[in-house]
Length: 176
Image (cartoon, rainbow, N blue to C red; front, side, top):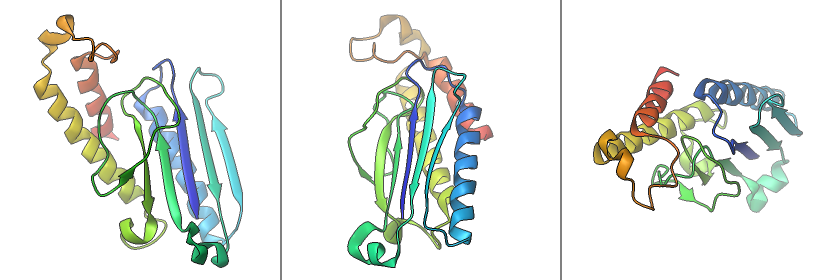
């Protein structure tokens, strides 16, 4: 099974609730296909009326492909050009898209090693990754008071969000 999510928000206009609704709808389709034992490819694009673009692609292979080493899950996401890290047990690969938002990066992991019980336990993975990002964001906010927003160094100039805006992002995640 190959699972890919690509989210692009080049203008930083998305709301976290939009992202969560998109992910939930995509995961429901993934679980429906798994329940029906379908071997299909799904391509989903949403938010056509916005400047951002969401794309989900699922590739379902047979047992032969699984035995050949295709039993991988890849989640590509780029919600921000920050330096936040994903959980350490996941192997990080280079992001393939660029944008501005709250999070950023790309992860690749083996379902057999990372997933808890079944191949449909994607919610648990997303929750653990979301909680990890919350801790990362809180740590950054502690190191970066809002008073420093006016005197940002060149390395910090890449971020278009103030400490208050990032704190609001944390609240969005915790509510959802």
